[in-house]
Length: 249
Image 1 (spheres, one colour):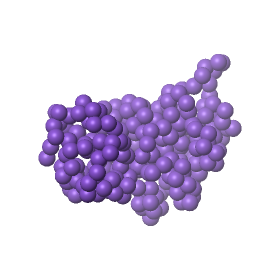
Image 2 (image 1 turned 120 degrees about the vertical axis):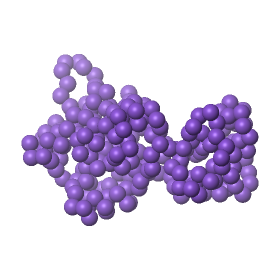
Image 3 (image 1 turned 180 degrees about the vertical axis):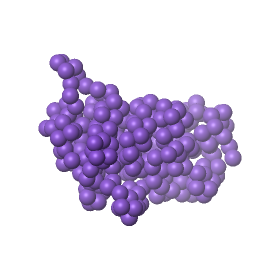
Image 4 (image 1 turned 90 degrees about the vertical axis):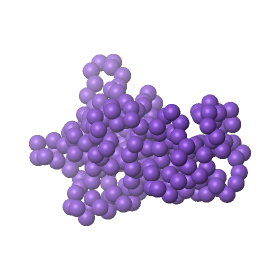
């Protein structure tokens, strides 16, 4: 298999196809703009089927990524295997659990991603939900930041966060966002019911489109003119309130 000095980078049409054939988790596939051929068509179909992000770049950009014969395509392998909500949620209900998930809307910093995964696992969350685009990769840096938690908690990668939230609503989950202008504090809500924490991007917070899908928005205590908490800290505060309630505290 054609690999670069980066252990997670595979290039060449057949080597990248082989990743999918072997069931190797793929983080992202990058195509040379204008590349054609049966293998390229097959790879794009596989990316759609397995919800793997795709990107088209100029030939020069691919050449900067690897000096090998990339044949117009390269892929980054993932450190974890992604799951689907359509599989995870029915399983949780069958196990008698009250689903508790954490969804990340545009969180792109791998350290925040890792820290949130560590908190989610510790607080008893059943999984993380991310979208194909605008999401931090589950790479070695993220796993390190998570202290290995990303290897031990399901991560669902969905087409879009909007479609993921719609699917969670259909499965009976209360969709709770985090924002400074929230209506109530977390301890004023019943967090023992099936629910998902929805956290927005670093800096921008929740997008308006996602906010419109939420069932409610909660706020965190904040003194004076203090602006906001880091997203991983904010998730931790809500997650541990949920853990407290679920443990009868």
